[in-house]
Amino acid sequence: MTRIKFSPLSILGTASLCAVLAVLVPGVGGAQTTEKKGTTPYVTHFIFRPIMSIDIPGLGTATNLEAVGTTQNMKGEKMFDKMSARCAALSVASGEKKYIDGACVLADSDGDKIFSTFDTRDVDKSQPEMKCGTHIITGGTGKYKGITGSEPFACVMMPALAGPGDYTAMDIPHNTAWEIK
Image 1: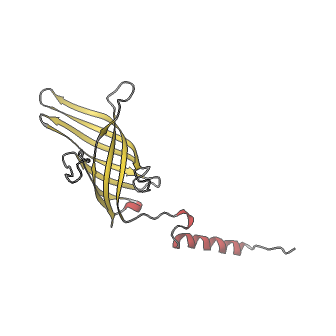
Image 2 (image 1 turned 90 degrees about the vertical axis):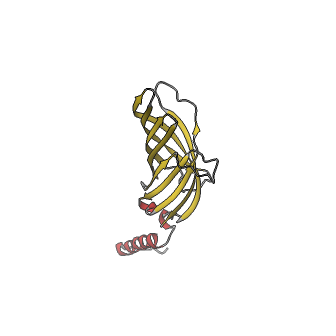
Image 3 (image 1 turned 45 degrees about the horizontal axis):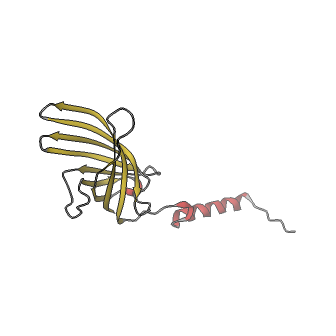
């Protein structure tokens, strides 16, 4: 019976080789690559919480809102899937004018983030089913650094939440065209 002896140097050498391969060879060691461009349909499942409101009877209302939720990629792909979402918004209702403007951050499980602004007055007429507004992706961190894009979206009201309070639920489907430069 032959015995194989391992010296500390051979174990160290093997560990070093594995570390080098993990850095140089994509896919080794669980490394993930992100596409640089794409079109992604996804839905954000939001809960909206009013934070503060100014109401002038007969003239109008302005309400600060916080929206939190999670995303779901509708094609089952990784991009824009299972991300946490948090938005700050201002809802204005004054006479015939009714709109919501704001900004959102999506974060993935690695902590990398995508930042966008949105405007419900900016509707993409080429996508009539996305008639609620448009997000503009303005940047990101980590694997999303340099991301830009446009996200026309729809607004689908969900049933009222149980219990007291002014919280509302809404699904927001997006058709996102994005690019990382």
